[in-house]
Amino acid sequence: MTSRQTNSQTLRDRGICAVIPTYNNAGTIADVVRRTLAQCLDVIVVADGCTDGTLDILQGIEGITIVSYPRNAGKGTALKRGFRRALAMGFSYAITLDADGQHFPEDIPTLLQANQQHPGALVVGQRKGLETMPRSKGSKFANAFSNFWFAIQTGRRLKDTQSGFRLYPVKKLHGLSLLTSRYEAELELLVFASWHGVELVSVPVGVFYPAPAERVSHFRPVRDFTRIFILNTFLCVLALVYGLPLAIWRGLMTTLRTVYSLLFFLVFTIIVAPPYALYHILFVHSLEKKRKGLHRLIYFFARLVTYWHGIPGVKFSIGNPHQEDFTEPAIIICNHQSHLDLMTMLMHSPRLVCLTKDWVWNNPLYGYILRDAEFYQATEGMDVLLPKLQSLVDRGYSIVVYPEGTRSLDGSVSRFHQGAFYLARQLGVDILPIVSYGAGKVLPKKGKYLRKWPIRIEIDKRLGPEEMQAFGATPRKQASGMRAYYIHRYTEMANRIEQDV
Image (tube, rainbow, N blue to C red; front, side, top):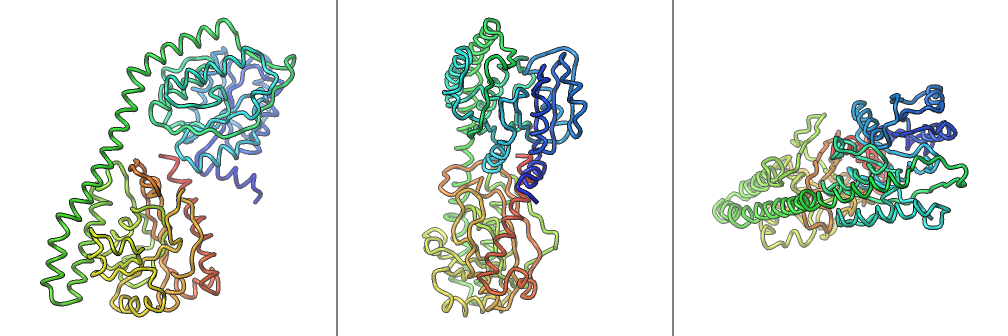
């Protein structure tokens, strides 16, 4: 499969279509649409009251969806109708580009990449070299004017608020019913998205400006500048009474969610857990019963956090198609994204033990519980660890290892180390892959605040020694092969989940 075919399929997997509004672009529309089809399998063209044969040309192109109406209503109306058709067809995102040939459909993969890195964001194609392009004074002034007022109305800066080459999260668009009918609607969409906390991302894209005599423009300087002035006056007033209160409320709620989760954790570790843990440590004489009691405590807390609203605003779900019950020991591996990963792992069973980092093992709040529950430091080395882990396996415990060793900054799957696969071979147990999505977006590495985002855990099929041979003959090759498997599984999960964020 070529990279173009891969990108086209990824666009469809992520619920992304292209929307092309057009008004009397008979000279360029066929080329733009066919080049877009080469990049994107799903193209919606909105014929906005065309009178020059554009509609006849479109009807001769297979594989596109046409939305048409007899009277020209303006770009804002065309976008609105295109988005509504995209939503009706089940799409989550729409890439818009102009029909006059100004934008390069070949830049669609750039917008796709930005969507993968920033799911749910509104991506703006910032036109490269715009300052040196031969444009009219009116066009240059309109762009600078728009950029200035956008910054005033939102407190954010974008260098190209007039670019029509964008990727919209159509399920998160606000103000569609209020949208003005003409081309200033694109500014409105940016402003309303910003007010509602939608992430705005700029990526560089190419642009083509034909010679002045060849350009097709429907811009009417006096009338359209008057409309823009009235719109910006209205948006400035609305920013004070609507946009600013929304931003304050959103920041307050983010802070409150984070404080609540921190207090939830502190109350449990300082008030609830110590009496229970100390009772088992001091008064339960059977070593095995003591350890089981501490494991039940850890399991209970993990389920509190994940299922009983320890993280407000986060929807948690599990996929377990093979009905794994964790009764048979295994080396459990999982991709590593966040501090929350331990909670999302330990909530599955009280018979799980993690290899931890030194600072976790020595933590003054809960380190004593982990130590007495036989959680071991990964830095101890294999010669020291193997006898201890063999004892755990013999007693029915599974060992949790994060092969990446450290949390990923952006959720991507980093290089796998071979230690987990070496342990599985030495201990004679299965590998049990678990794939995690979303924890790194709720609380990313170096993040300070909890975000609202879904967390999904999928438990895959156990892999015995013979099945692991398919990933490689040695632990090192198995680590590399398993990483490729995780990249595929994580991408599959992200494509599916990020359509609804």
